[in-house]
Image 1: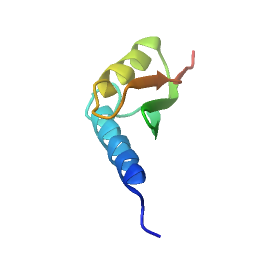
Image 2: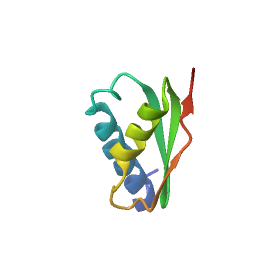
Image 3: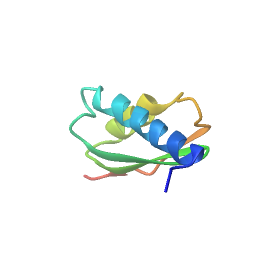
Image 4: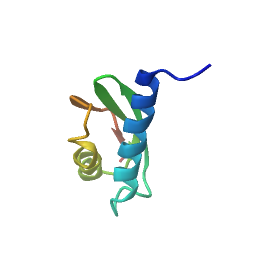
Length: 77
């Protein structure tokens, strides 16, 4: 079964988001994953501080095709 254009777009957006996350020094070692449901990009995972949570959101903001970043990353104390 061939992926649809929507599936291709979702895969491409998630790949770009992951690339941005791994190229940030504080984020490359964090447990963060992405899921795209048009037009929203969801960030999930666990980080040690609110600062890193905000860095993740900033890193993926402005991606084409994403109207809203939903940051569901959990901060573990």
